[in-house]
Length: 173
Image (cartoon, rainbow, N blue to C red; front, side):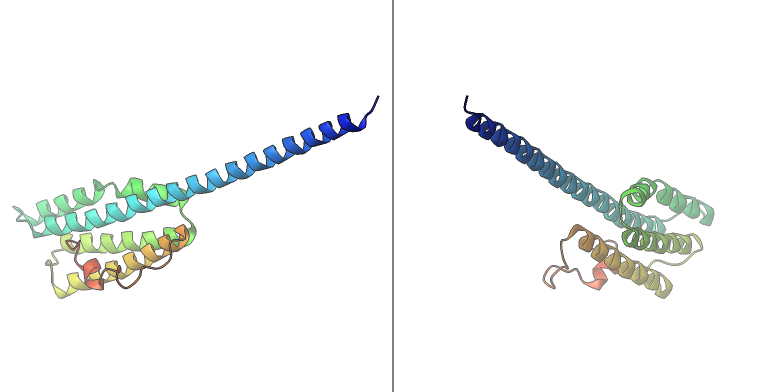
């Protein structure tokens, strides 16, 4: 009996099985990387949208007429609490790398200072209010840059970059 064709067939089958296993493993790794990327993109989008809407809401509540300062403070605190920011933050803390988490915390603290300022009676568009919004705009720009870096998107071109005043004004597109 000639063993050479049988051994060649077995060797070919073994090589095919190993090659298929390696290809499957590589495909699985790439799918995991893509899924992790999609998850971070979803979390970053949720967080940036949540904090932007929160800023717009805080300003709108602060501009409204309220029967008393206490009711204004209550409305502002409820807007802050009910914004969905806590859920978005927890997702960020679980998934994002540390630099992105720190940057998102900076945005949160800026919004907290804006809310607290309105609660204490700071007028919308006063110099103090504008300074807080400018700090929030800078923190948001840094956070978005870190998010883009983490996602491998690269920096925004000047043509696509919003003006700094767009970050200052929560009503800007």
